[in-house]
Figure 1 (tube, rainbow, N blue to C red):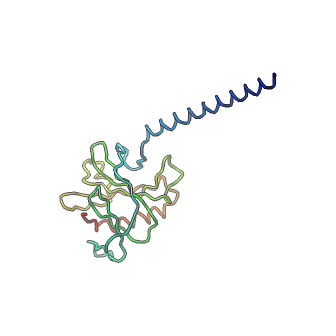
Figure 2 (cartoon, rainbow, N blue to C red):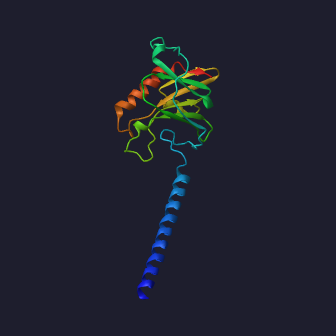
Figure 3 (cartoon, helix red, strand yellow):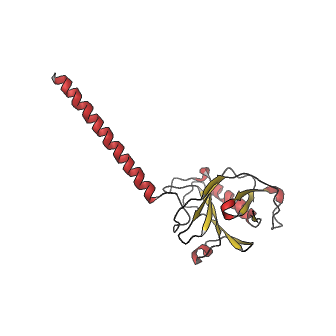
Amino acid sequence: MARAQGNTKLIITSIALGLTILVVAIVLTVQRQQTNPTESASTPEADSSVVTKDTAESTDEIKPENPAVDPATLASIAVEPLGVTVSYTKGIQAFGYEVKRTADSTIYAEFSADNLIGTKCTDDTGLFASIIKNPTSTEDQTILANTVKLGGNTYGLSLAGEGCTSDGKLLREYQSAFSNGFSSLKSL
């Protein structure tokens, strides 16, 4: 009888401990989602409202405005929320993008690749570039590597720093691919 009571106490204690661990895990998950609903490595003032996420797919033949770039070397991806087709040099590995808005409603797309995710930064997404539609603040304009005017809009290319990635060479390859094709940005 004493042994049965000991087993019952052990089972009840185990269940209580398991439930406690489950509750703590749920609370931590909810807190993390509230403090970091989506990851944003390049724009700290963003309210991180994600509009879309997509992966790269090549579209039509590209005719770059920069005559130094051979159109046969470019591929493109449509970023519908920005209203543009973004060109990049063929040959880079798969990447994706997320379209977000800053607190002052500036819309931008963050381009990232899983193989650029490093271990140096918490919540690193492998960000390598951002395209900002109609950058308004002085801060937005000072971080731009290049700008293109298209239709009544200005688009700015911002390149991520090497602080988080574990592969700086690969990061520069992605950035070079986007920099080379940026002047070929087209309206949808």
